Length: 78
Image (cartoon, rainbow, N blue to C red; front, side):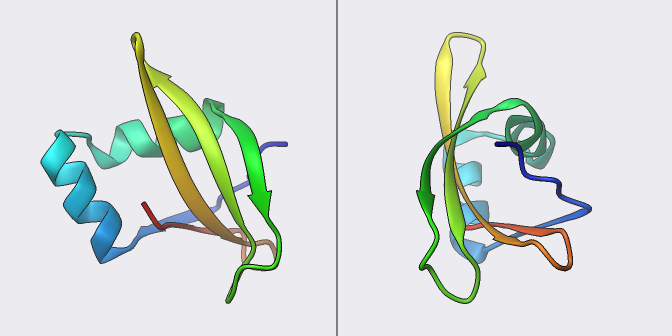
């Protein structure tokens, strides 16, 4: 499954973790587009969320994204 994000927003927690790990927004967005959904949390609120595995070279990148399917909005949680 791939998430069809028309817009991507970042939680404060995600931005903090990205800053600590020196990961750019563009890397995360590309990870969402190209990565693999490895877990689904369909009961999460306010939107179902998904754990995505992507790669930065040889380094794994795990991204948790809440997805509002109606608005095609992805919210990067962490």
